[in-house]
Every structure is written in C-alpha cells, then in structure tokens.
Amino acid sequence: MHSHWCRVLILLAVALSLAACEQSAKIDVNPKLQSGYWQASIQLPGGEIDTGLEFSQEDEVWKAYLINGQERVLIDEVHYENGELTLRFPAFNNHIRARLVDGNLIGDLTLVRRHGNTQVMPFTATPGVKRVEAEEGNSINLSGRWAVRFHNEGGSNSVAIGEFKQQDSRLFGTFLTPNGDHRFLSGYVRGNQFKLSSFDGSQTIIFAGEIVDDRINMASFWSGPNWHQNWSAERSSSVALPDAFSRTFLKPGYDRFQFEFPDLEGKLVSLDDERFSGKVVIVTIAGTWCPNCNDEARFMAPFHKQYRNRGLEVVALMFEHFEDPQIATQQIRNFRRKFDIEYETLLAGISDKAVAAEALPSLSAMLAWPTSIFIDRNGKVRSIHTGFSGPGTGEHYVKLQEQITALVTELLDEPVDLLEPST
Image 1 (tube, rainbow, N blue to C red):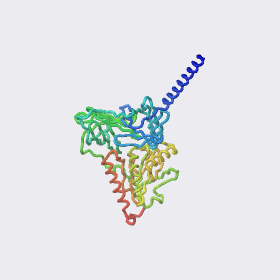
Image 2: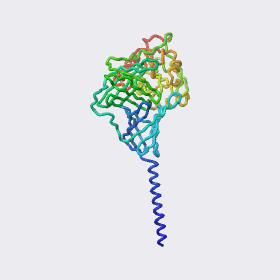
Image 3: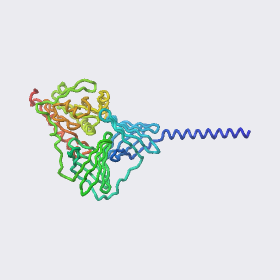
Image 4: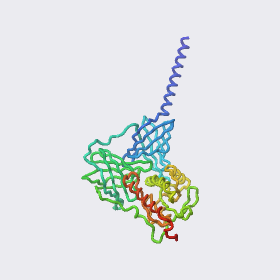
C-alpha cells in the first residue's frame, strides 16, 4: 500500500511538472508585445538610423506608428503572432520583420527598389528607451541656413540648402535640393560631431560629420546600404536654388504636352479625351516609391476635390519599380487608398528618368520626381514645376501650396470665350 501511494505521488508530481513545462513553453512561444514607445534602430554602413515606434492594441488588433523626427507615420499593416512581428508599408512595398527575443525586437528592414531588387538592413528595437545622445549646453549650434555642396565623382558638385534647428543637443532639419527635399530629419550634436537621419517607410538616410571653425567639411551622406556621397557646407543666409518653375519646359517645336497611357483597367487615356476638353489640367509625373511624390499626393488629393467642380482635372503618370503591369497596378491601387485619390492614375512605365524622357518627348528633360505640368483650358502649357518641397521644409511647403493655388485659380478664372481657339 505504501509503495502504491508512492507511485501515485510520483506520477502526480511528474504530471504537474509536465503541465508547468507545457505552460512555460506556451509563454515562450507567444511572448507578449509591449504597448507604448520603442526606440528603434536601422543599421547602415555609415551608422545607425535612430527612429521610434509606438504600439497599441485594441480588441486584439495591433496599431503602430513610426516616429520619424517631427512626423508620425501610420503603419498600414501590423501583424504580431507567436513572437513574430511584421510591419508593412504597402504603398511603398517595404516591410519590417522581427522576432521578440528577451524583450527586444530583432530583425530586418527590406526596401524594394527598381525591377523588384531588394535592400536588406538590420533592425532592432527596445521598449521604453529614448537615448540621450549628448548633454545640454553644447557650445556649437547648427541652427540656421547652410550652403551645401554634394561632391560627385569626377570632381563636380551638386548644390543644396541645409536648414537646421537645434534645441540643446537635439537637431532637426532637412536638405532642399533643386529636385526636391530630404523630408524630416532628426538627430543630435555631440561636441563638434553631428548626425541627422530618417526612415519614413520609404527611404533610409544618414547625414553625419563634424563642425570645424563654423564649417562642415567632408561630411558623409548615406542613402540605403549602397549609396554614399561626401558633402560640405558653410553658413549662408543668401544661398538660393534655381526657380523650380523654370527648370523644365517644352522643347522647341512642341506647342502641346501629349501622352497616351493605360489606366488601371487597361483603357488608354490621353489629353485628347472629351473629359479634358475645356478643363484646367495638372499632369504630375510621379511614382508610388518616391517620398516627394507621396508628399505631393497628400496635397494634391484634397486640392483636386476642392477645385474639380470649377473645372480642374488631375492626371498622374505613374512610373513604377515593377515592369510587371499587375504588380505595378497593385502598387498604384495601394497608393490611391493611402491618400484617398479620386483623380486619374495611369501606368506609364518603369521608374527610370531616361524611360520617362523617351515616353514624354515634348519635355526638355526629366529632372525630378515629381514633375508637374499645368495646362490651361485651351490645352496650352502655362507652367511646369520640377520637384516638390514637402512638409519637412516648413515655410517652403507653405509657399509652394500658395503658388500652386494662385496659379490654378488664375487658370480656372480665365473665361473660356476669351481663350484662343484650339489649333
């Protein structure tokens, strides 16, 4: 009898032990993802991009925001299960995949580039940690306007403007170039060293260097894991860029801007279609992959809705990373949903400036994504704007919106009976 009860107790202990192990295994297999702020990092050859994530959960549905400097970017798709996290940016076709290990997220960021080629960068995130990069009271302050030169191979330079704001050790700003801007950048100043970086769902960039005698010499610019360029800068309150409304024009011999590309259902669309007759038309040459094009669409979608009843049409010629029309079409559909676009978006070709220039031979050159053509009610090109200065540029973004609004309303106000007859 004593032996029998001993065996029972032993079997009971084994069963309890197995149950405990099974419960422990369940906890390890599906660890809990912590809500709130996470400090995130993306590794490039030139250093780390410092960014942030905010997670929240409601009714077992996860929601997340990417904290990119002074902007919050809603992450379109968040999936977490069994310790595996996937964050997707469908309009850009990029994603983060990571696993929760000892309370930290460890994984990769994958960016999809032209022809579907990918770039993969290490990604990590730690909950509730905000790094202090430098102590307050730096003797160096980068706030202000800087004349920038990017040093190209062969000895040539590309001009740009750096506009920075420093608050103690924290540094914010952007770079304006003739073709657009580098959006929201944030970073730090430590001694005479500085760094600005950004990840907004599309681009991964780092600007880093040192300040000597109020000059920046041989600083470093990384975009993704492959593109690297040196740059230098000096303070200048008078530095200016070429007028974006004068860089692109129609070639001699052309008096109209023409195109013919399929819409998302495969139907060919051109400016000769009846629906454009007597309308003011904005044609924007863009791509879903392009951060400045996204900024333009964020402005253009509500702008079109505001003025279409007065006779405004907008057409976007989309040059995509994919030659497969089905994949490219899906990217454009995602883009339309992201910005609630109701204007026409046409599948124009692969995202290559030479391809775009060949497809649009009336333009003097294809210099930047986006490029926007403003056409009056008689089909005449009245202005072409190269690039787009987005919200990261502050007052420049406000000014550009005002310029576009003034131009379009002027064209809309022109009485049709005073226009020259179409030739």
